[in-house]
Length: 323
Image (cartoon, rainbow, N blue to C red; front, side, top):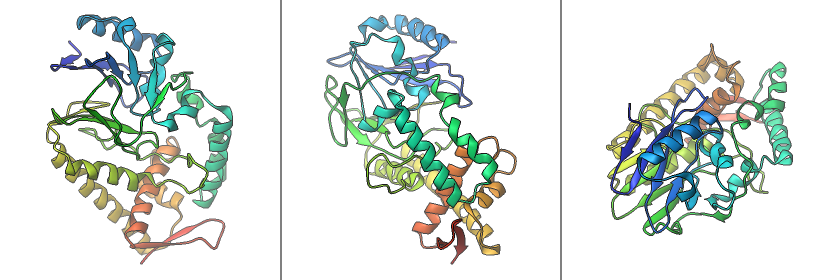
């Protein structure tokens, strides 16, 4: 099966990953500089597949002149270690500690989650998991420096006409890239055709120490796309999306319905976030604690923002109430 999809100047390459999400899509763009958007996981299988598919479009890795990142997750950045160090890597500044595997940052992250999960009422015997939060996935990541930064509204150097959109939610470092002349969006994991991206809990990346609320961020990030004419969205995983606005409306509707289900739990009795998580994910919460707690807290943040629930923070363990 041919895994390479071609447009006039954007080439899609599908690479295998060791993660449950399956294959990842990376993109080669012909511009003033030959640009790679995202690099797959750090595996020989992905690297060999990439070289083979790149050859099909007439290039080799040494022809890549710059690499631009949508976000820092290992399946999007790990293969950077296989590229020449002279190739500049560009992305959101928040990628930096993840790409360099900053151990002080990881220790602070573990402390953040320990305190947060205590507030959310997570059973104490789960807390040691937080000490090894990154070990299972970071082996597939990289050790690389960013050579340039991109923020909201900036044009990618070497790719005239491609504008940067800051789109946090799935990750605090998340960016999408939009070409106004064609309506093409390269969206990373912002919007996927068949699944909803996880709004992952992360520590604050700046000194204000306010916990990011990724579900609210994700909703805002995809909602802003409703104001942009998009001909096609090239995604981080799975198929391209053509009916982008329709899918966004559907995703927002389904998320609101999910939140309403959570509110019905709280109508019956006040609960901690962990208790809500156990009800929502009875079979997997203990195996996928960060993912399931992120989803749960996202719904609670949404309901709180909508004024439909309140939270009692007077005790060490917070409890949520329906209003």
